[in-house]
Image 1 (tube, rainbow, N blue to C red):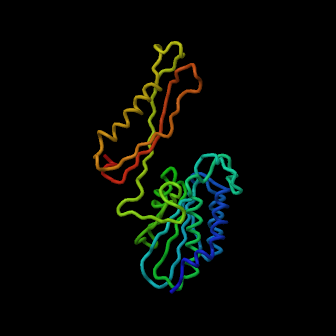
Image 2: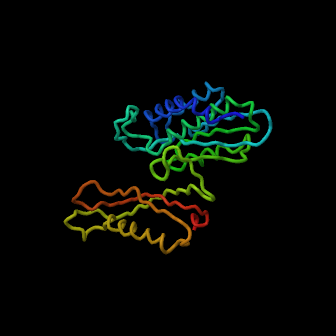
Image 3: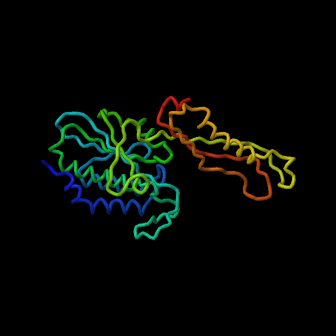
Length: 270
């Protein structure tokens, strides 16, 4: 029987090199010229004919020509708009972005799977569709790729993906799975409050949007204790709060953005 674990170990160095190149060259959203060029050229060297979707997603299909079903394997490619503060020899060369969420790992590992499966094409049945997703951090990447038809031609029967969590919940070398939902939905929202600007010495002549927004932010957390079924987990996060640009004046506008995550579609919609 073929020992795929040993085969994976034999290309470990290559996967590490791929990952470090991607880590050094992080890109954000759908604007991924270096990443797309690297992934597509690497796939082509393996014998694939990768295709681009409308938002710089990448799809490559391995067809065994032996009939059977279609399995989709997916990895995300985009980085976060966060400066990397490490002294690693392969640290980010882009001061405005870094692979702080591990998508460089995911992409390199999927390339590794693509190589091993291509080398063992004669042992397979059915098809494997490799999907490299852009713009995952904004949650728009997957939807746009689905709209472009990645679940069709050939029609996908099952899909698999995973996320690295080393250092949080798992130790290096461990792989975990979960019965039922494992990854939550992620809906991004933005709230804007229009106030009335005035000098900080005369707040009575204005309408303070920061004060209003602060009360909204506190009140939003009551959703978790009063508005949702108590057996269903929901995570509400406010990650951005923007208002004003001087310390001695009340601005005319304030805004905040965040995410709402849940495992249940009914809870998500209601």
